[in-house]
Image (cartoon, rainbow, N blue to C red; front, side, top):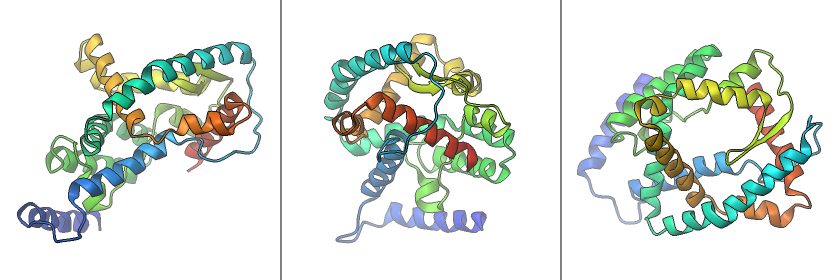
Length: 253
């Protein structure tokens, strides 16, 4: 069925390249923007609704709260202002930047799919990479999802460890990177080794690329963090519980 859908996609994309959009029909760029906004919201709106209290092991809470305070000031006084200025770039272009970096991260998702024996998801990632890298113009457009119906399924090494029974350990707030735990912090090291980008670029180039990726995500976000600070009595506890709940759900799926 996936092969049939891709063949149909080839016919559709060829017709769209030569046929103008009908009156009242959304453009490809508009649809792509809407789709990517959904992906951005899914990644960044981790805490869209109040979550029930969870038993989260947090033995270094004072240290974590200090790092949380630092991250908050970094976001408020640097990351968010830069993201607001970045919004002068048309949204469709910023969506394409996000698509580009998501496509480059395919090896991380593919490897973790294999490690978890999710062979169907692994084949989907390969198909997405091939079609998005070619017909999606180096991954600028998520053609595989839009025309082929093959959505990206985020997997990382922290989830892989969790699938093999490794517990989350203690809660941890990482400078700049935000909420995590002992298992996921180790998982980040695994993902770094699987990611070709830091090995293909000089360190300063990789940091610049990562910064652009994160600023793109923040620029597309609809002030989620601001909403948390406004509506929560204790944003630290809210984010801690929501993160733990989201990660357990990701491992169980």
